[in-house]
Image (cartoon, rainbow, N blue to C red; front, side, top):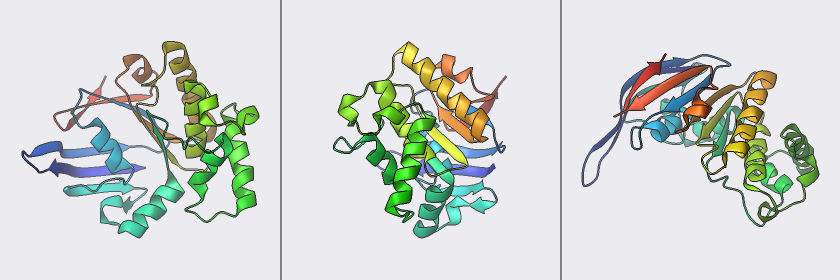
Length: 222
């Protein structure tokens, strides 16, 4: 699925920050991978590279053989629209749109017809247990329900990879466990490759494979 070769990301400003340093890594098709590490260690930067949200300073990020680092903006947009689903800590839902409308927004860049967008959005909400909340605004939903909507928005594109950045960071322990159960279930049922960044060791231990990143270097956790 993923092959990273000597991936390096350097930010320059008042001081130079080496967020990633010669990272070489393989992630197989259908793996559930957790990435942990200290604040500023490079976790989110690595996830951004895997998602084509940022470009490396050097090195390659191959997704199913295609180097994301070498794609132009149109190619990256296509890859994100067709292959990648994203889930974030802060949900990033549009407060004036219903749950179903928020999910539909993921299909707009792909120019999916309105009727099909609606059908797929309702199916995605049903897959996360929120079919009955389709017409509710985010403000009418709990934190856990909002994160379920965000997961549905990621899934509606029918991606092969789900990337999650601290998906339980804003949730209490009980809701955290529900969301992790949901992600694990979707991973098993849909054969997704799931890569999640988390500071929570309880969440990380649920993964099939654990990585640690610190000072821009990635190591395996036994």
